Structures are given as C-alpha cells and as structure tokens.
Image (cartoon, rainbow, N blue to C red; front, side, top):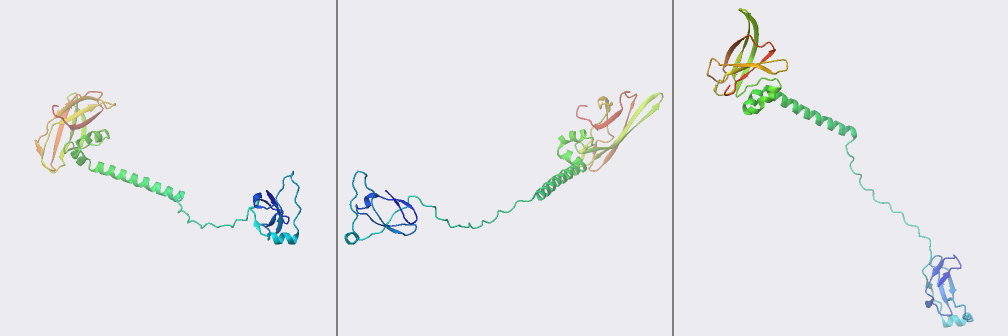
Length: 241
C-alpha cells in the first residue's frame, strides 16, 4: 500500500493490514505532517461511509503511524576529515643516490688499485706463498722470485770476436726469503718477434746455496745465436732441464 504525504508529497510503502477499514491518522517522517489515511479498497467493493468526526474520535482515538518512506532523498552525510597520516619518509633524492653510487665505485676502484700496488711491490713474497701466481706475473711481464729467488739486473751484449757474433747475458740472483735456499741452474731462452722461443740453454751458478738476502752474479755467453732471435728471457731452470 502506498501513502503520499499531502504536504511534502513524500511517498511511503506501508502494510495495508495495519489499517482498519475506517483508516487511521499517520505522521509524515519527513515534514511531521499528520493526516488521516484510509486503506486502499478493491474496485469491486463499495466504499463504506466515512465515519463522523465525533463518533470516529470516540470509537477510535487517533493514533500516529510512522511509516517508512518508499523513496527518500539521501540525507546529507557529515563530512569526516580523516586524520592526516604521517608522511612516509622521503627516499634519497636522485643526486644523493648518484653521489652514493659514485662514492661506492670510487671506493671499489681504490681497493682494486691498492691490491694491485701490494701485489706488484710484494710480488716476490706472493709467489713464495703461492707459487702458481708466478705464471700470472710472467704473462704480465713482471720478473718474480720463483721459489724465493729473484732474478734481476739482467742485460745482454752482442759483439764480434774472431769473426763470430757472441751474445753475453748476465744478471744477479738474490734470496728474498728469511731462510737459506739452494740455487738451481739458470735458463736463458731466445725468442723471435712473435715471442716464440727459438733456442735456450742453462748455466750453473757459482754458489750452491744463498743465505737470506744474499746475492750472486752470473754471466753466460753464446756464439752465433740464431738470426731470428730478437729478444731473450732469463728464468730458473726446472728440474730435469
């Protein structure tokens, strides 16, 4: 059953069974207007005579019925201001991140350079502690003390003697450890422009052992070296050479 407030035209949907045939007073929930509402009657049934005022009021005291509206405009919502949440700490700015990255790379480069300097200056001690590193130093063109013996001050001269070309190679051998070491033979190799060895020979030192820090001088000569030999290298001979 649909009721319409005659004052504000608000429509309500109510249960028709709650209304007696004579009707009852109802109040509008929106504008508080009170009026007498009659129940809906089937079209086939004749409408009963409206009750007289005094008899109706005596027989049926007016009662107010608050019906729920069928359609109502939404009531205004109170605006609720949410509590401001603390702002998250801002991350580092771009220039700060760039500075940190640059500083990190600079520190890494400094460590690498420091390690390189230490590995170069103390290469003899490194080879003594880690003999496998001698091949790495050799490929880098650095002379190292193999097994604690350092070859240094090497030089070569070529001169004609009796119609023959004589190659002279000399140098020193030093014990860089804190213990006495045996002195092996010294190997001289001749290489061409492509660094391929074309000839080699060995020479024995004048001493059998070297004490810590002691050095010995060696000199060796070769007549008529190969024509393709353009350079030389000096190293300690391996066992069996």
